[in-house]
Length: 419
Image (cartoon, rainbow, N blue to C red; front, side, top):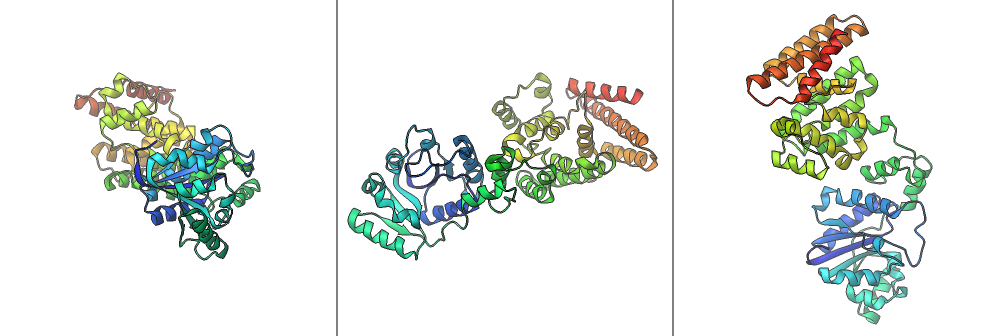
């Protein structure tokens, strides 16, 4: 449990799945209660109703984390608790509040108007009213306000009617949409939609490549990435995205969306300090060899690739992750996508370093003269070879350690050129 706080806000429910209405209700509740911390409590075995067998508890818990803890609007004051899910047997609110009472001076609990009307039938209802201030959405519901007055008189209950509407949609609506193949956009947070689709929950179909890398998805990713880097680095990142799209138009039009996403993510950890990079390696279980320690410019490609499944799961396609992981060092067995991201990073139009300009002109001249697919393949190979030669020469001139993988990558490209 966290340290004791003055005010704790508790929002419980089945959350199967958590939807946009839940998120908005939680935000309004946090503001209205002026709580120091908001706890989202996915319910365990409910005494009054079955949760159903559509999803496992671990899925509900993860979806709640994606919906609430990942939302910056909570300002880091929201956490998801597995207290009820981890408890064996039936979950009663009075027991949950007993376990929480030592974590806060005051507990505020959010309920709906219909729930409020039936609370006196709960187990140890009087104890519930003593342990928590009940916050009810919404003000103006006659039955709920009558119940609030009755509870105050009979139990000394403290009930606050909030100036908010109840949830504008239900989890049942989301489940029905998922099962019928309908769109979930606008119903649940995007990362929750991805989780539902990726895990085929509620009968939902898997996400198609077109949906995964749609303009809407890329636009959303672009804004997230913008917040993680300086304007200069972001400008370069946009340049890599544009160049990746141009290269895909020549070599792999069907990969355009994926490679644009790879370009947006390739430098997402670039500006982290060396100790932060090492921390991420430890976090994601990456063994850092001597080459990387000696050449820290290689760190960011490794940590960015490792971060994608964790922080950007909707884009965690193996081909994309692989391209990000080798975009700086290269690899002996570079795929076409690996090469396109590596080259896009090198020759994007905002780069004015002499070698970048020379390599860009070399490629552009070759492509302009190419007549056949074979000609274009040769231009790509020749450009990649020249890029490795330039990189190795610069490292040697600056007397920096040279990673063995870069030499092996260069030799592998050289072999391709001679075949």
